Length: 302
Image (tube, rainbow, N blue to C red; front, side):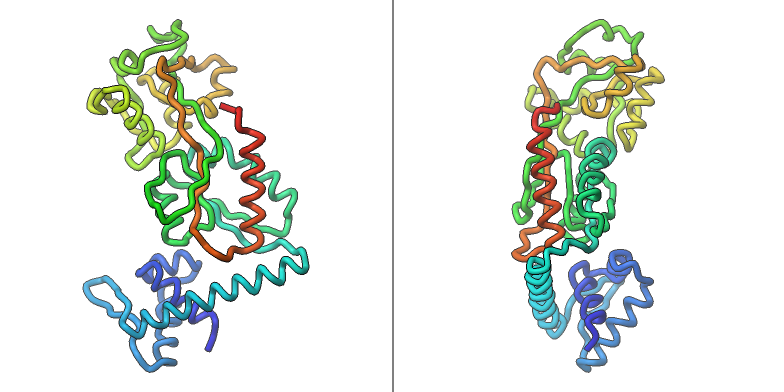
């Protein structure tokens, strides 16, 4: 029996979607369907029930999935054991990061990692925090880095560092001469915010509730999908916003934005999130160790 057939079946069964499995495996959907049918012919039984554009595992499919899980775990264990003996660190790692982290934190970390481990190929997927957690849950990525709390207790969450959020306004704004501001005063002006599902938005709204304020007081004039877009809109005088201090160094230096500390300081954690896998690829363990060391040396960078 071909390992490839089992790998394709395992991915479809985990995601319960031929379309998502094809995307995950970088295959066409007909190719995925063909591999699953080959496996069904091998066992001479259906492994999936297909009804109303949804699929579910048959009893036989569930049994095959259990064994496939154990088989691939043994493969991981075997690969780790051999690589530890030879000292070789190679392979492909897929990392997911929310927009702020992908643009402002990961380039330095991954650049240093790649320099130390040139045989490891690192692929980066960018989404908002909700999307990244979903990718970790579905094993689409090996490691996620997010900027908001993770509610799934079945995942491992390791806090890396604290990121401070500040108010940003254009230089000629009535608030621009202040050094600090109460968030309620800031929100008297049109607000430029992140999209639903954004970790930044979630953290800000949670902060408002802790200040005894309802998120309903936010007069959102426009929602945008990235820190760069937010900064551009504030620079253009379209409104005020709250942004990560880590994202605005260039604009402060050029004088195109003014930052005001929030009177009740707002911090949020940048965290690593991954599955509780007993056996991981050696390259993944090295990346985690490398990332932890990076976080330790950058702990004080707010």
